[in-house]
Length: 173
Image 1: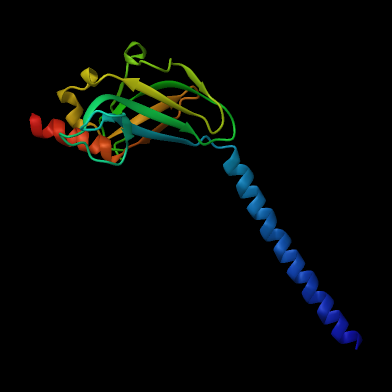
Image 2 (image 1 turned 30 degrees about the vertical axis):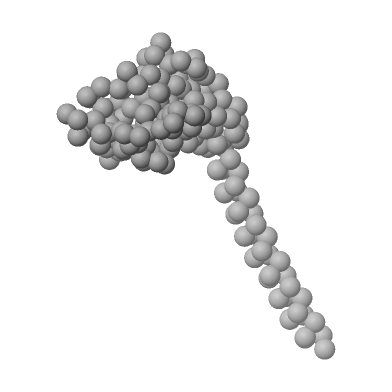
């Protein structure tokens, strides 16, 4: 009888110890990820419908001749648990695997709504709008949009709307 109780207590102790170690590792991993900067960057085409009723934002729809853009924007969402400062927004002209990525920042004077530098609180979003006249033939080399934070980190993102715009510029040139 004493032998069986000892075995049961040993099994309970082992299970409790292993589950405690497992939960400790999960907690450590969560705390490490909580202190990282996480930012989502999207290119957005602000379009009007063919009947020009209400404007809507298109990130996944491909731009067609029926949908004429009246402006573009780079949307930044702070997914971190702390505020961040945006220092620069623009376009990346090189693929991500190239060591020295060529970037082109949008001039703060060309942006219409948000001012740079911009402070984003946790889970907050900002749209950096600019005119379609800013788009020119050099845009056929664009790979993605990017954002630079005040700590010097770059985050990039792309959407089907950006790829469609680049394809249209490539076809027209």
